[in-house]
Image 1 (cartoon, rainbow, N blue to C red):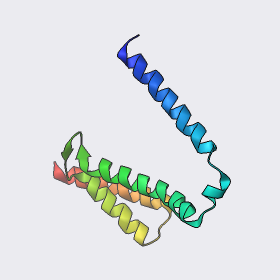
Image 2: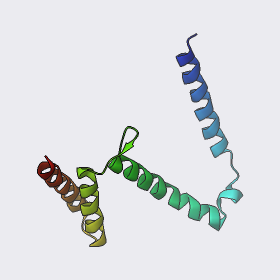
Image 3: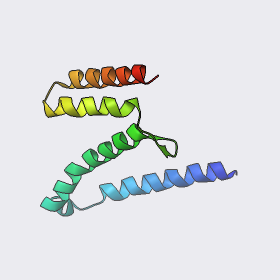
Image 4: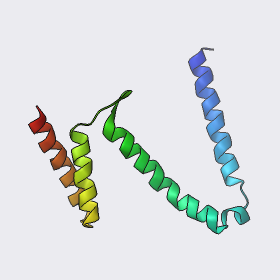
Length: 103
């Protein structure tokens, strides 16, 4: 058996175990107000970290390029509470304009 297959099987078993343990947590633990507050914030924090990393990095380097301009347009649109399609379109257009004028 190759090391890749061992890694695949091992991570699959680990994922299954974590999911099983997650379903085995008593409901009384999950009903605590602090845990509920944390659970509502986890997706927001993860998505924010993903956007931040994908906006300013290429492989292992930090680079400020047209993607950051698109992110700035999206944040501005969010501050004005514009609809989601307008935010996405504005970010794409802002990024495209910055890319066009950079080169």
